[in-house]
Length: 293
Ligand SMILES: Nc1ncnc2c1ncn2[C@@H]1O[C@H](COP(=O)(O)OP(=O)(O)OP(=O)(O)O)[C@@H](O)[C@H]1O
Ligand SMILES: [Mg+2]
Image 1 (cartoon, rainbow, N blue to C red):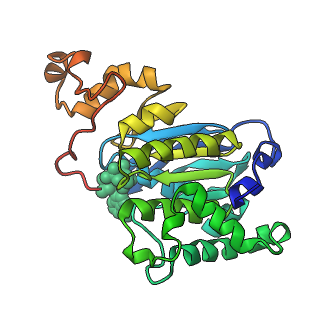
Image 2 (tube, helix red, strand yellow; image 1 turned 135 degrees about the vertical axis):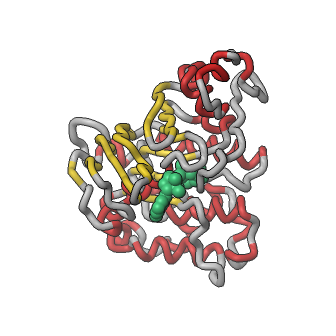
């Protein structure tokens, strides 16, 4: 065992066992004034599984994450974690129970080194980890940096590293808490192609350890390669759910992603009109006009 994550490898399958999914989002609605950001969303995330949450800019993906992690109270609906209703549970308690999250906007401490950023995150979770980390704390942190592929930056200040590396630092900070559920909001943005491939492998490894991964991501190559299940949000509603092949073929998804404004336009196009980079790839169009991120 060479990292915090590996220290606990396999422990998640047995822990918190209950009937039903690890995470359950049940008819969640979020309204901001007149805007319905999330509309009756229902989906789950399970141990050993990578679940994708995709959709155009402003579709409500980050708002769903905010509801799951506790930063946003739903207008209606329920979030269950390990079978328990956590809809009113504060963020830190959800985190203690095993939810880890990375943010679309980077959250690291800029003046601290990469290593110290992970150390701080591990220290915050020490109440959970101290029994397992008597003397090997520093070593475990370096092993974790190695595992996510940023060991070369360990002594750099966090505000001096490239964006892609900073995203991996976010992941390392999140893993330092040994989460059962990882919520990753656009984790690959800023990574180059090689880094993205390695990142996809790491996600599969983390899932194989028994963690549940829920990922918001715009890189469709990555989504199609690593997700077991994908849910597509459009204007707050889930318009399709299924495995990558099913999602790629779904006409409602194609319509949402191509941004047609009326049925006639949509009918004029066929599946083969979907902009394809490769057989397995969809391209996300530019942000819809008037829809914020
Ligand atoms: N705090 C807020 N107050 C008011 N409106 C908000 C708030 N947060 C989000 N919204 C609106 O809710 C909708 C969903 O936003 P959200 O950030 O969840 O979308 P997203 O799918 O994450 O988009 P992106 O892909 O651009 O990150 C948008 O119309 C957004 O402007
Ligand atoms: Mg977002």
